[in-house]
Image 1: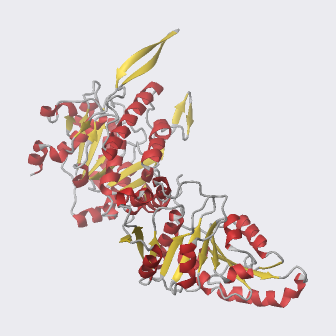
Image 2 (image 1 turned 45 degrees about the vertical axis):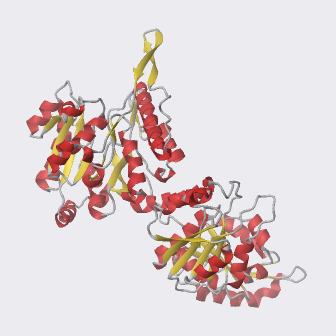
Length: 603
């Protein structure tokens, strides 16, 4: 359903093997970045136009033998190919396009001389991302330095460095150079990339104040095996080059150097915050690949139980409910039978009812599950409408170190909805918060549309996150009602009382604990009763308010004071329609840890 990329950084590299050019450094770099399986080598021989191509027959045979020795894995005959050409660069461009290459790796200066091309031509006609290496890259790269400010090629530099980190376990350090005239707060471009680096703990950060950036980079590079930096960012109407800093370092450094340039022309101001934020896609890809799970990975309940016992943690399941008599009984029995009686993974199940006027509470009580009416919990703080209020108060009613929330309207309930969420928390101690995602069939008339559900997610929540919190753009279903986390974290977070609770918790998790503290799990398919369109409109209205509230906190500015919190709804009645007004004001509850009654209850 939602495939996780095998390589979140660089999938396929092409290195031209040119007759008469040693290119060992380029090959070492390629294997360090992408591993043996993802490096393609193909041979090239240049013949002047006044000579017959047939004169290269002997050299072509020698080059095929070279290719055979260079390949570390068996690939068949496809890439045991040598291209003899009057225009080898044009031939290489065609191969890059045909084979869908992610990164073309060229060694300077030998590849440029042998392919009869220049840096200007390569950069102006770049068929894919380009990396130019010097002749000092070895087979064993132990530490990497990235001088990074947040320019146009920061994203590619980070991808290459993280790939080397994964392949070689190399240590990565970032270097940010400040001038004496510019403070951290004034450096707009770095603000963007700073958000990325904060969420990449594997990168050690170094900062230097200097008015001589070239020598500062030279001095820092002496302590590292490899330096990765971006080419000069220039407007599209100027002659492209690697830039004076990169060119001098490439010529003079005795350590490995890689200079990178992305395929597409760059039209964003390199000094802007937007430039730095382009590197967020690296962060999101990395997170998606490493922190996206499938419920089937945790189907071995005995193994999960052993992890739980070893870590000496308790787990609570809180079930928010409002008029769910049709489904609540089956939800409770299914979960209790498997996850309490058969395998004691759960320590308690609690129903948090929002004053249902059907038989929801009676059904749960008859089964033997403790029932709490959220309007009667912590009465000194009053009562608000909304699911978020029930979730906030469930912290007070439960005792587990881990708390899982699952809606009670699920028609196709299965234990995977719970153990799928518990699994990452037991498997990875650095994960504090887990969201579920799934296919949501939508019933239209008498037919089911397989992917028709989740309309508010796709039309409101995900666009807002992409705009204002792009680190969270990899969340498949940020509004899903199946999620959970560690009490020590959840009790520190404020809770919106209404529809904004899910997106509010997600944003706070990101800003307070970092992207790596969040995971998501594929729970396969969820069948439930879909809401009418007017209800979805109210949900969207509340979610937009919640996001604006979080942005106010980030920027320290009030935006909702003068924003309307009443929504005009269009009502249809027989042959007429009219406007109806409903107040939808998202309000937050404080972190539960700040409530004295909660503190006393936990002692």
